[in-house]
Amino acid sequence: MRLQTQMTVNRISDQIWEIPTSEKTGMLVPARIYASEKILTSMDRGVFEQVTNVACLPGIRRYALCMPDGHWGYGFPIGGVAAFDRDTGVISPGGVGYDINCGMRLIRTNLTLADVTPRLEPLMTELFRLVPAGVGSKGFVRLNRTEFDEVMRKGARWCIERGYGWHQDLERIEEQGCIPGADPSTVSDHAVERGINQLGTLGSGNHYLEVQVAADDRIFDRPTAAALGITGHDQIVVMVHCGSRGFGHQVASDYLKVFEKAMRRYGISVQDQQLACAPFRSPEGQEYFTAMNCAANSAFANRQVITHQIREAFSSVFGQPAESLGMDIVYDVAHNIAKVERYPEGDLVVHRKGSTRAFGPGRPELPEIYRTTGQPVICGGSMETGSYLLVGTDQAMRDTFGSTMHGSGRTMSRAQAKRTVRGEQVRQQMARRGIIVKAVSMSGLAEEAGFAYKNISDVVETVETAGITKKVAELRPIGNIKG
Amino acid sequence: MTSAFRFLDDIALADSAFEARGTTLPELFAASAQAVIETMVDPATVAPAVSKTLVRHDRNLPELLFDWLADIVFLKDAEGLVFHEATCTVTEDRAEGEWRLTGTLTGEAIDPRRHDLRADVKAITKHRYAVQQEPDGWIATVVMDI
Image (cartoon, rainbow over all chains, first blue to last red; front, top):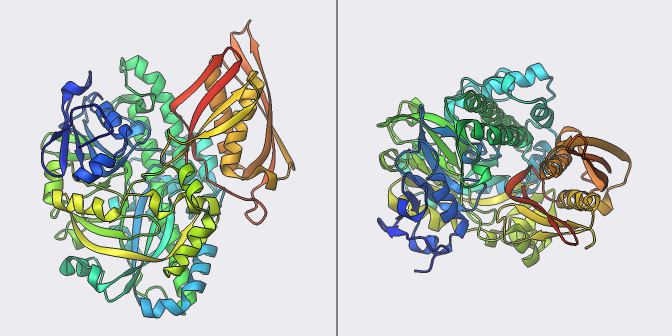
């Protein structure tokens, strides 16, 4: 087996690979990569370097982990998971990512492919009109600073109070859409200025809004699917992938600078400047944590306002209230975040960067409706392939700090993708396959072509076989909106 | 060495990276800014209707360049501006032990109907970030989060 690293990588099982602490000076715990042999051989060298750098951070527990969709990131690899002791460990913006609470939301409907196909073009046009996307896009919600502070504190709850959603939406969002302890005084004016006009916007890059189909033959666990509101029979669902926009990025940038200086004060040295960190209990660590929670809440609010707009679009095109169309949220997950969670070792600060929480059945954090199924996990594929709905397992709680994959993961650079195909070609190819694409940027569309990503089914099979999540349904795209 | 930039393939799989060069520091700062501008928009489609002049100083030259590039990202989100061109002066104040930048960006408010918009740069990162002096000028390596 030829890997893109000189390090020793030991096979623990067919899906788990371990790099021992002897492979890099300073490693406090081994690094574990979840991957099939095929995926492991395709992983870039950044994954091996970065996951072992993470294993050197103070207070890390058990393992530094990387999920099968892992690839090179800033500081942590994308797909990285690490848990630090709350009292002796660190918090690192590089372990959360720039797009704080970038995440996925899935909305169900009572509509079928037969209902939607004749009106797909006007539906996509209306969605494209109501959900702003692309460079510099602004949302329709106008906020003053006091109101934006409320968004930071209350997240999706603020939206429900303002009429942008239904009360029952909240239990179907991780943390009920509002992480407590968010303190707007820890956020810079710069961050507020970047984010105050962006509520309800999609952004660009790999962010998207997708209309998808749940076909009967792609439901893998019918009882669980039914409990999650997925009935099959060519049911139409809507998936959203976006985060905290410029606001979250500015919070991350601001605190990377703070932590660069703080590390000297606390005598911490790191292998990579992007792993800048501070003790979780330090003033800097606590300030970042509360500022990060402000950004996380704004991301929940962002996806909630987008949900409101999606319901408006469907209601307008199909001439029925969204309630009659059964447009409940299935779930909303964060895949760039740090949280304090309880494990046998005690309270740990679990960083998930390009990784999804995957709590198994029975966890008190789960809403009553999903207490027996396990937490829904939403994983987006490339715009040309399918996406997946999974659920968390007890084994994830034991093995991966209740964490799993988040998407398919890139294998080709943006520049190379653009050299390989033009955006218009991608649009036409997708149209021939029955997928309508509305994109602000044609070059951005080329960058997101399906061939630039790993096959998501390979990634899903790995986490299924490893037992850290269970497949529920595959969802096939028929309409896509990109920035 | 003349002023120029090129995008790098092998550094940032999910994002975008460039190497900028300049015989002088003002050329390096202008070339780096142009790389950030052209990542977000085709500058040929942006009219120089608005001018923003930024004055910054820092004891650390790489930090000065970093903040100058981050300003372009900030102005895109906070003021809704994309740019056509950047010009700079960079001087060293030896008495104060710091570098001083006066940078001017010309552009206009974002209009998706007229501007050929590209990728939304969301952050300038420190990943493999470097500013180096060579015998014939300056080189910067910058990775942008997309």
